[in-house]
Length: 163
Image (cartoon, rainbow, N blue to C red; front, side, top):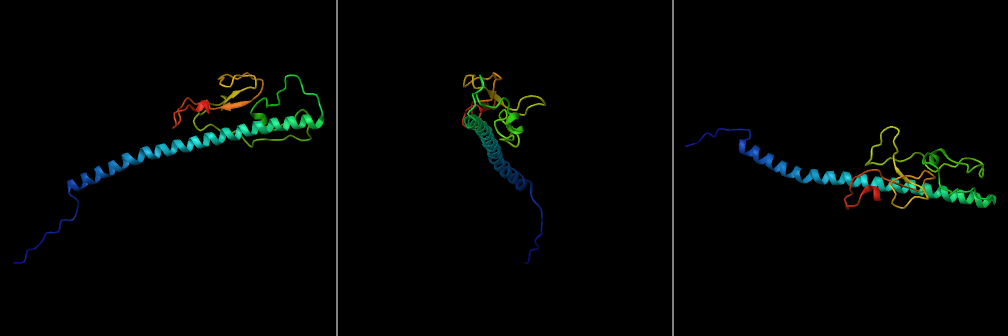
């Protein structure tokens, strides 16, 4: 009358296949979301770095103009008041002796998260005061603006180099 049940511990092949299908479906939903989050983080970093450099350029220009007005000195011919190079923002400038000590505007030049420059190559595209607003070549007179050298396209469909 009493039946003896045989205890089979383990998984059947069907249980394993069903489990793998469920895990595959979950992974197919999570991986694109994680990739999008990573791209969004890099885009935020690019915006922040562009803002940091552009703010430093603007501060340089304000300090140059203030140094000129405080000294009541005649402006040098063809001097726009913008830095000659990005490195000048890190090294500092005394504006030709108009101020007592060099004023620095950046601790370092931030990098572009979407463009990996080789050694010696520029990290950013630059435009001078005399260049067109959408120019992709630098006139070399000064640094009026910076832009990304990446050919990538943002989540919103715009190109990074147009930011």
